[in-house]
Image (cartoon, rainbow over all chains, first blue to last red; front, side, top):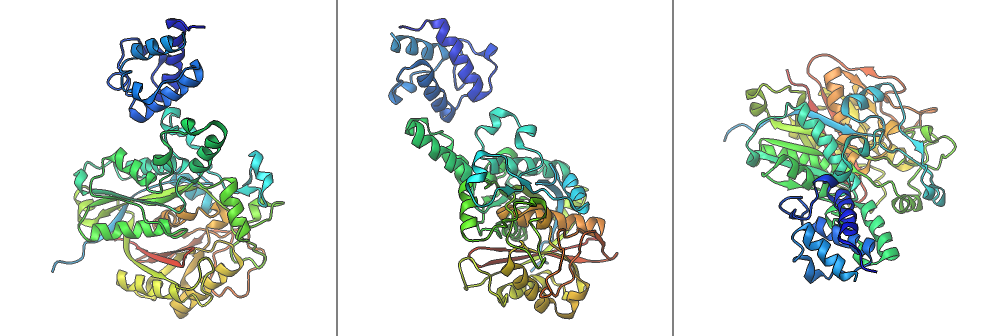
Length: 82
Length: 413
């Protein structure tokens, strides 16, 4: 069953808070992972792997560099879960 | 040629089994407290030894969770002790290209390696943390401290098993003498309390098995000693060029005046029973410091509580110091802290600096019956007052592989 954008955003907020210590309240769709949330390339690997486990999707390595904002990741995961 | 640059100690930091910082550790040491406890982990009863000396204050009590999840425990210890030492030194404003870091570890991020191997087996390669390598590398503790303080004169990690911490401080001494740096954050850390390293040490019969009385298990120089007790934690000293320290009005604890390094060429793990390498290291260190055996009033011994090691060391001390050994108060502080491996030489150097400052040699606890083969003057049960005036004290540290390191500290007027 496809996940909703709200489901994925809520889950992703928890993951980013866990990995990078960014309060969930400051994590929004237009935030850039590296520039706004200080998620560096190694932390991004953790975000990706945790997202795969949580949402039951595959995020191929060559797609990870395309996920620049939280919104990019949410949209990718929603589509992948469809 | 100009005179040799002198090096002084201007800051101390520690996190040990008996205290979360240097002052509380020193107070517990003088009070003769043991940091050894029965382990509560599930694995503890699957190996022959179920006790060790964990740090008194867990890193999770003083560091943020998000910071800790990217750090091996040994790296957390290095940051905790370095932050304390840096603050103790007055958080000096200095040229970062003249600031270095030398922090050692005997084993490196061994618990990270083993925990991630468990994850690899259970969940597959994709679940292995991207921080695995920076967490397990032995230079990780030094590198994280270098990053935090933006040290650009060089970040180094000597590795010589249980001599590593002392070797790091000696390396730092040379960096300042050689004019590579004016200030060095130096020390050693270890975080190896885990089933595999403990099973390995137990297989060598190196660990005490006195599980009915863990607090009394580490008993250097006692006739019934049966091995060392594994400890964790670390110590850090800020070493600084003397004129640099004076110019900024720094608090100066004492001088680090010399070091002696030798190797046994005898056996991969056993000490040379004649202790020739140890004797040579002491002589080299005293000559390097420009002092004689007459000036030495205190020595923090390696004395890990193993049957062979303690006596080999004591014999070597007696031979190297001769009749002057009669006025050297010998303390075996591993009786309280356990053996911190690569952290040992560092915390014991912190203890020496405090001993010179307070003129007190810390006690050795748990000696019920002194081994008659021990012919040095052991400080037992209670601290002993050291003489006023100019004094010098030694720290000796040895490591599997036949590494011998002796450091000389002396008072500064």
